[in-house]
Image (cartoon, rainbow, N blue to C red; front, side, top):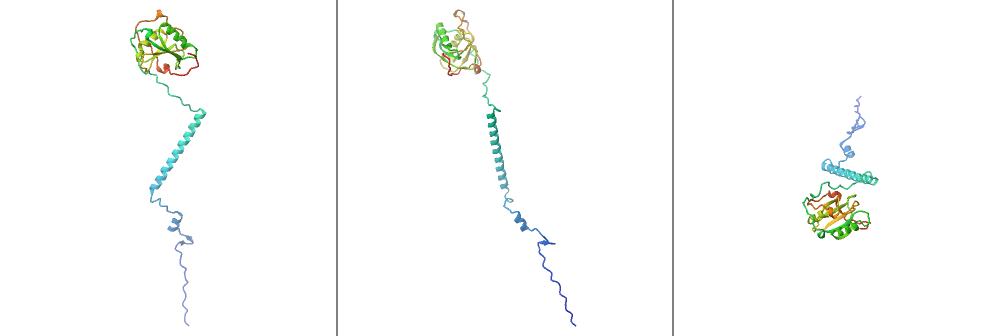
Length: 226
């Protein structure tokens, strides 16, 4: 009796991406999940994005700081003050010596720096009686209070200003850049009268000055009558 040959069992082909029933992650799977947008090969793209981010953060910080600063100003937490003038004189006080000149050769502008009505009018009348030539009468504000008078002139009016300083007691001198010899007399609240003619000191001397930061007169309207 002939023997029937034994048949070998047919083995199924193994799936190359499976291992003991578990799927093996392949390169294609990785590419699908982590798609390559090309940035790996172009690092400058990252730097550009980084710079843009830094600029945006800085702009946001500046805007926020400006808003906070404005709010602080509105609430009064921060106060802005004007810079104070220098404590040093603009120029040296003219030392002279100067001599008195004829009052008739002195042209004067008499100005009232106070709220006292008629102060400049009274002062101009007294100066005219003494022989000075009064050019104008008006008002002018100054940065100093409780003073007798400020005498203002240019370099051409040193002697004229010196004569007025010897005539009006307790005055201070301030120089400006006017080219002529006219003199401004800015009267303050302490002005009362002129030095009696017989008591005017006729000795040559220099001008008496004060810092322009406290004595520099500037034109301004005033409610007081001159």
